[in-house]
Length: 357
Image (cartoon, rainbow, N blue to C red):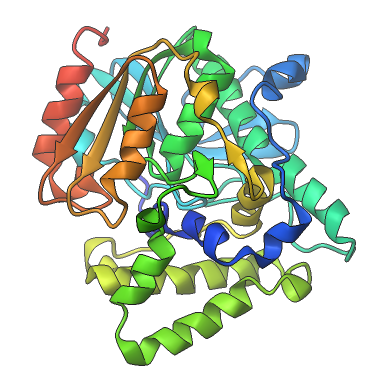
């Protein structure tokens, strides 16, 4: 089944902003989320019984996740990036594998057509609102949803493909539930494994700003100041935050010189509060590399040579996993599966040899 909504490829760009514009983070130096927390949820991780092919997966009594699939065969779960930028249609670079695998796409909670559990905060208690964001839309909630999806699919072990922010999320799921991961493919995984980021050259915010025309940089700075105005943040609605996220996406698309309306005529709805839920969960200081060292499943990490995100960021994942291999796709940007679909398919097919049913 195909869905004709659209995703704006922000990739890891939004996530890089938290390091540069740190006003939000004075309230949360340490992360709310710590590896191992989701495993302790017990029975709360068990979803209601439901058909696998449902267009909405019910993961909790009040949370539905929009879902579509492509192909036949062994299940593979696709984790989209952003955060909050769901795939609008099947990945071109996976089309040659649809005779062997069934690829399941879903909109993470708080994004796309999935449930948005927060619209507007009535309270202006900053700390209580941050806790609510973490509980309803944070990293732990997203990891728990993947575990519930695994049970809906009926698979003892998952094969996961994560793009950008989704690569980071897939990695953290693997750290929580290594016994339920068969194989992991990370495509341009986001620069969020360690914060503050150790490599100044990996600061994508600075890269985006530098590539804008000089006359637009002051406008961009003003927009970023508005975006990270913590004094007014909790007065905004989810719809208002969606509009701001879309505006930021336009800056990124401009420097990449991509005509997204021509490539994807219809545009889907990004996350609003979901984006901030991720930021709150991770806090200002964390290093999740040690958690990945317990993942023994094979991992393929793919870097695109023309990506704004540096190779050093991607290699951080390669070094953290004990059983990882590294691949580079030339003449491709952040979405290498669209820029070089044949090369992408070849690399993935080789890595997944022996996993199809």
